[in-house]
Amino acid sequence: MLTGEQMVRISAQITAAQTVLVTGALGSVGRAAVHGANKLGARVIAGVRARQLSGAAGLQVASTIAIDGEEALARSSKFDAVADTIGRALAEPLMAMIRPGGRYAYTSAIPDGAAERH
Image (cartoon, rainbow, N blue to C red; front, side, top):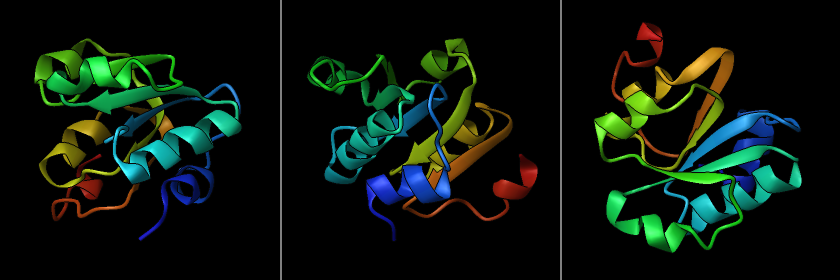
């Protein structure tokens, strides 16, 4: 498993001015990913549960999004990259939110076959 900063730097290969969604942004790995993406000059979106939106407002991010509701993701623009600390059932919908040529980096399990479908 990768730390959050390694995930955005090595796996997601974030560069300045890219938009990256970091899921689980209030957890320790998510916070490290937010910090790492900020250091790289990325525009960071914090993905958290709806009940955590107010807590995520204190993070140094461009905006926050509730990732536990399909409607919030459906209204969102596509991302250059997703740094996912949650995985599992959330992985596939997140992969669909990545711009062509973008990257999906993760520290958790993804469903079998999800990567092949996106």
